[in-house]
Image 1 (cartoon, rainbow, N blue to C red):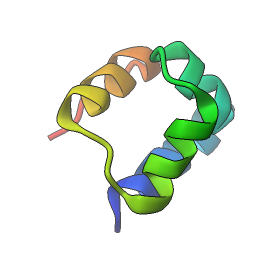
Image 2: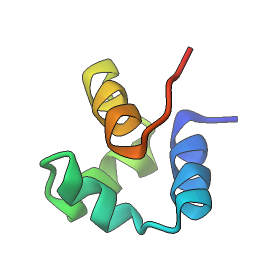
Image 3: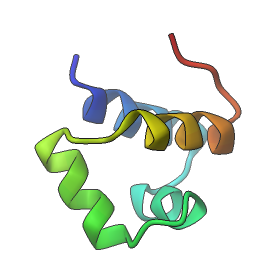
Length: 58
């Protein structure tokens, strides 16, 4: 499973839109959406996502 698919699945489980997640990590939703489509989310962004969503990643 691609990283972007896991992020989208987590958003669904937490009942939050990808746009709202982007805002919570300080990203412009349109730019973050493009990163997800290209599957180019950075490690730092993954750490921010995990923190905002209250999960850990390995």
